[in-house]
Image (tube, rainbow, N blue to C red; front, side, top):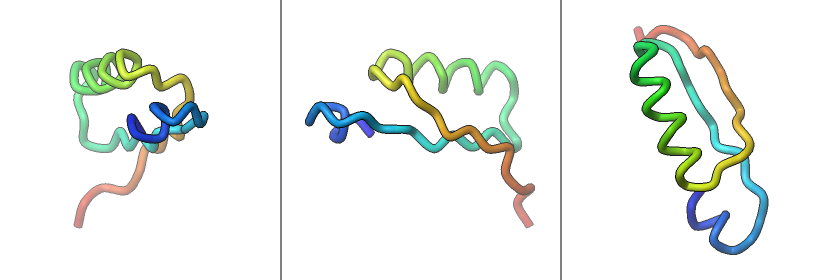
Length: 49
C-alpha cells in the first residue's frame, strides 16, 4: 500500500480483524493512518482451521 500511495494513487488497504485483540487492531490502524491510508476494506474474516 505504501508504494501505491507513494505514486499518488488512492489505495484501500485490506484489513482482516479476526483473532486480533482490540489493542492490536488499534495499533494496526494507527500504523496505517501514519502511512497515509485513508481507505480500508475491513473484514472480520474466518477463524483459522
